[in-house]
Length: 348
Ligand SMILES: [Zn+2]
Image 1 (cartoon, rainbow, N blue to C red):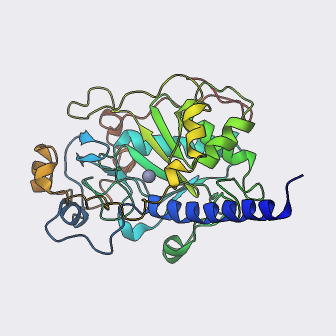
Image 2: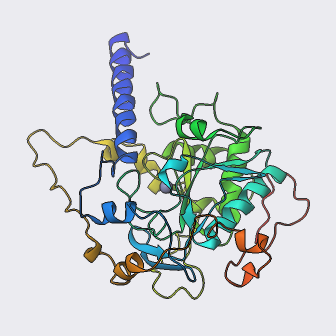
């Protein structure tokens, strides 16, 4: 039997840790947060561009250091998706990324009991660093999807700005998914996203990864694509590989084989990732502001190129709707398969 005092201390320190982690999650998510970008920085310059370049899509550089030309926009609304936070103007990406989001939304609605997706940030019109919210999302191959299902009605523009995020975590516990919020449909949505071959990584909170490790009874082949990361407790982040033939797109090594449920995950549940700097320790040097000259050389050219005439003409599907051959420049991955029941993810 544990003496009361020890038990109390234990739960107190656990609570303190939970609170610290809460703060850590916020700071992890907000690592790149700034009220306004530093004038002249790459973040300020890329953030001020409102339209993409003309021409074919090109991802230049790496997910966290690069830019994007020939981006297309996710339409703000589709039968199974709605784009959120439209004022941020970050619904731009490679056509492959946009096609994947649309496909995920359709498949999730059809097979997974998930009525549709709310899509957060993808990339800026010409990619590049963002002054708030993300370190990556720079080359049109990253996208955030809310863990909140799409409502049955079209949200107003104002609602898309203000709809609050819902964390999947129990705020009173150490790094634990709240079972009153979490659902099997969310697990199916994550594994659906992981099932697509072009998806290399999906970032989720370590507590969500743990929940998946403990509860996913289907095929675990793609479970390893779910990567534990700070934040990501109210949305998940999909990263796709450099599309075939994209010269200049710097690939990331594939994730290690296995479900990723062992040691690397256990580390997140130790104090180490959440430790505060020791008192008196020298604070880490503030990273130098990224300038356009720090990015791949071609990114200056991307900034100099003329824009498309409007966002509408560069919206995914617009060319197809106008009756031109969009498929030649906007490859869409093969269509979803027939009548797979929920939870049974087709392997492709
Ligand atoms: Zn993200």
